[in-house]
Image 1: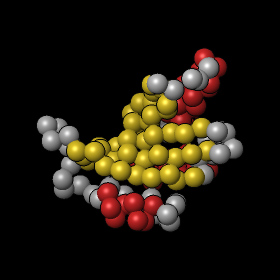
Image 2: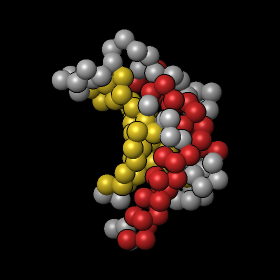
Image 3: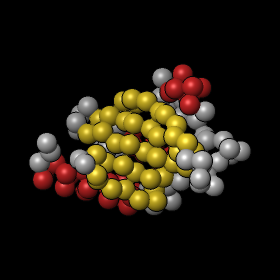
Image 4: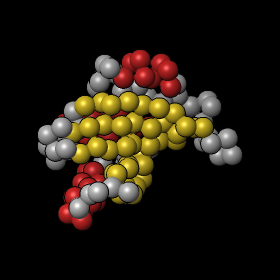
Length: 122
């Protein structure tokens, strides 16, 4: 179980990310001890670069990417990325939405390991 301080630290990190990337971040919240950032599809590459390179974030490890289908939505697909900061001992989930026709920009230029996951997800 996470301490109150750890949950508050994740909330502060989410606020930092939202403040530094206002065009990319729709919202950030901590639920069940996990930080989730809801992002704009068209800004995903710049947001992911920020998450990797910013000294307060240091999410240097790409864990995975997966897709979720919500058939009742206009933008029925969510692409969900998971990153890890070993230095900070934090994880983040980044979620974006898209429809059947709009491609999602690739993050392979930031994390070459994302190549296989993107091919399987997209």
